[in-house]
Image (cartoon, rainbow, N blue to C red; front, side):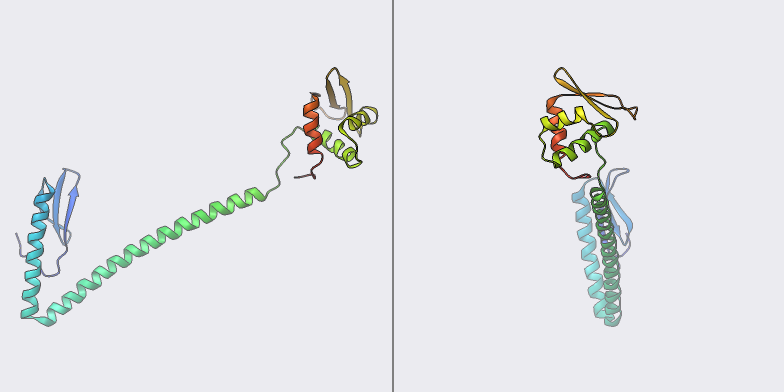
Length: 194
């Protein structure tokens, strides 16, 4: 094995194909082991050789020692700076994505909702709204609608239910119970579009 240079980077890495524990010096594989204990022992030995080489260089050529030390420090700082920049970019991208999702949710919630009821039921709510504004009860409003309905809306009682239809539209007629009419009467209390 070659002599370890001063300031060399010594790493122990697991390789998957085949499953081995490799010892690397400056990114080059110098030994492969099947167990991590042997690889760690080899790395410690190489580290001791590196420290001895650095001490020898410092005694023989202090200027060269400090120049290499400074160069190694700059390399490590450069690597860490790159890692930090990648991390920052990742975090900024994640924040930007979260902000976009929040904006989409905010804009989706601010759009007025379309009524979920059928057009015929919406016309019933609109007719009940005007009567409710006059202070009529549900019973009075239904009686009023049977005698003088607004526009093409027609209302008549069929047993326990009320039949609603619109003569001008092709909407299917609906038979509504008292409970369903109560719900529509409550909806007529709210402002349109809410």
